[in-house]
Length: 222
Image (cartoon, helix red, strand yellow):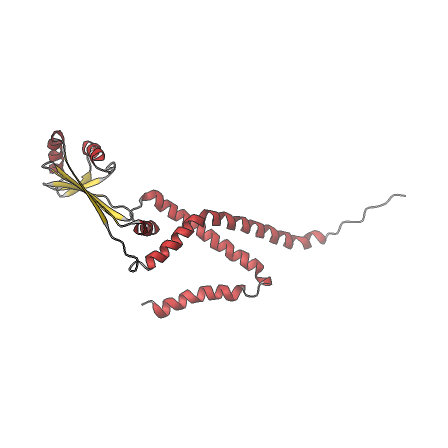
């Protein structure tokens, strides 16, 4: 006597689909959430700390440390510099390769790709940097002076937060960090939404987080 297998239920698979889909979504969101949090971890700490130091910049005093170095331009370079200055007087033009090579050896600077403001008397190269400032002035009579101003580690971190004088690579990193933070926040919100049925406080807390900044901005920011 043959035993026939019971017919498969056609309703079991569709009934299980919503739960399976929910589990897949939740697993995917958790994966994106932890990956974005890992990318953001160090930068989030940096930006959180510097957010506090920027907010209290007036209370966190820093004493500028100024370094000055003087030197003399080799006489062999001066004729070419004077001709170059006459061609670009009262304008901005790249630093000549010979001058850049000499300056890189005489001062702690790298003038490759830099521009100078040229006049009949001198060339002035602005060298802004995070946490301070610097400049180099090369007089056409042969005198050169370099000045570096450093305002300390806190000022350096604050400028890194703002992307001030940090160059294109750090600017790209800030963009990547902002994107990772966006992914982190959106996936966190979606995870909370999925669990909201078992956590009644989810929506009141989210609503409070949305309303509080708006109310403070409207009432106290003028």
